[in-house]
Length: 276
Image 1 (spheres, rainbow, N blue to C red):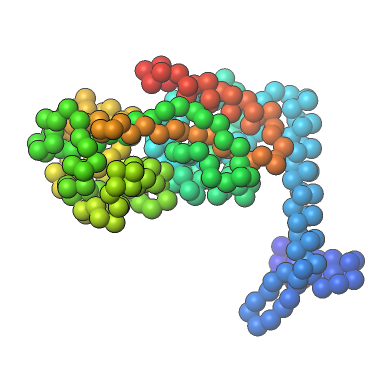
Image 2: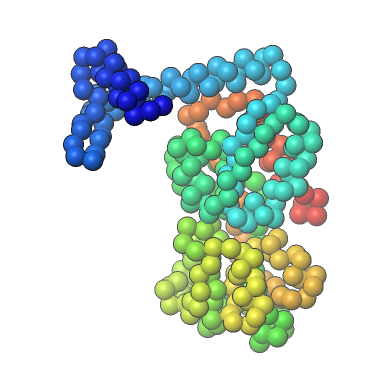
């Protein structure tokens, strides 16, 4: 719509309710308290309209339509591709749109209803979201094959803290879980010899291969590098095992499509790693 058309529609709405909906000042516009109430109801009306379309579509056809999915980097790159391929083969009329970001960002977007389902690297901390546990994922130390820790059977957090360390970025589920692990061992994350923070598992692996430092990553992300012997993986002592979770809003109508995907993804992710 053009700006004059929008202005006209807003004016019509304000006349209908006989009140101002917006506060206008130089280069700024904001909702009045009444405007906020109208906005909240309008949002609910639009959601109900979407639910109506979805429910009628389900009664007159099969599983179809758009699926707005979000996933953390680790899950999106190393778990979901095969699951999404099998889901598409079974339900060809589903159009999946996937957002890839760190766990914190995915959790936030599911909570504000811009995503239907999210897969993250820890249980949700938001009370507005329902969490389903998917599977366990072990985090291990990775280092170059020539690194001094490569011959070790296992590595303690104190030994890791003594090495140059390459970390995921703040907001990453892997970063959050690793920081918590160090704290439980009496080591402040601020005391690590942090040489670099990177937002990509592939970039971290490439950097560690050069011998610049060590890192902690999901074992499932390094299968190729272990086969090629470009990296070495060592379990931590004590072991570091986290839970991968699927989240969706508690207060939102769950369509047949969303329910079908949730059930399908949970079943596949709970299988042994070799069968996923």
